[in-house]
Image 1: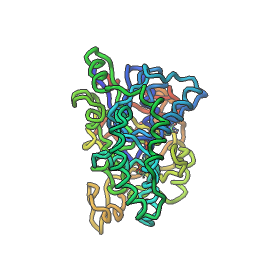
Image 2: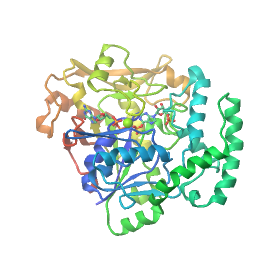
Image 3: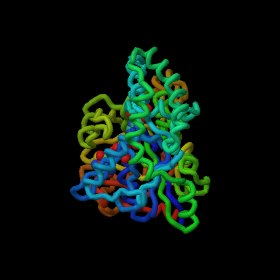
Length: 429
Ligand code: GDP
Ligand code: IMO
Ligand code: MG
């Protein structure tokens, strides 16, 4: 029996939340280890829809949720999310939600810098969520972040805020944006401290104890490998590592804790924000997929760009992500299409290549090499076993497995929790 780490393998929104919620019935603890409230995970349980950004999806199953040290925490966003889900009937208390005391805090100035920088980038903008994620991670690495444990030490806050403001006000003034005062920061922190501090604890210690007691841990990744700051389509990426290896460092556990790595992939591809997307569709086929798949961002409401399944990109994501098996989601969205295609390579400046280049200019120029096969008319929506799937859909899934060199471990056929086909149990893997 092992732990399971779930990561996105495309550009996010693969359905990680749905799969984590489904798997959480087999786990004791669900841990977020990177990202922040740039993530948006939609879970559908009968007629209840849960939209989570920062809270681990396992809370919906009544499991312990953990926000690890690798996450950047916006306290106000967190509190309003807690208020929302408590209203929906969930229990969120310091017993059910543990937050790493070493997690950095996202301040209002981080969002202001994120948005001001995007505005001046013009046509080179990244298309961030504008939530201050990048600036907050920059502060962490620059050693000037305010962390949750600092909230209990006024003398530490005093000098840290001075250092923060010296840096950020210079930048904000240069960008022509309003600056912040020490009083404003102190007032913000004063407001959030009484609600936030009770959740703070040495997560690494509790997880170690749980691990020793044989509890099953499910690590819940946000974003995806192609948005990883090292392995993604840099600079059109998020500011954290999203690959499975950071589940350990982002929660304070050793690498052995990671266990089976389940990569989540849509049966096609989507992307929100700017940046290269070789298999993107700009025609009615793409618009049809967007409509049937309801492809609008959970966080920003922006329409998601849609394209064919990119097996070449996935091969890379599987290798750098350390993926042992994939959960293929949204197969139902391809129902009723005459033909379906898979990107099996790229053409760059007249040459055929098998791996995605690293330089941004080349990444933007690559054209997809497509393999097209017959689609299926029957519906897969709501299927709960292989026997419910049309032969041609099975052929499509098998071809994907062959091309990416990884097995399909789970298959998802609707947003509903139980419309899921288990092929092999990742906790047994
Ligand atoms: P995440 O960020 O990876 O957790 O994914 P999101 O929740 O942002 O986006 C995935 C969307 O697809 C959500 O609206 C889900 O309810 C929905 N979804 C997940 N799995 C399936 C599926 O198999 N079929 C369909 N039609 N929708 C799905
Ligand atoms: P989940 O967990 C899809 C994208 C943004 C932008 C880039 C950088 O729901 O899959 P950031 O605000 O992180 O600095 O933005 O990353 N992005 C996501 N796209 N799903 C997400 O999360 C994302 N989180 C960030 O759109 O292109
Ligand atoms: Mg999402």
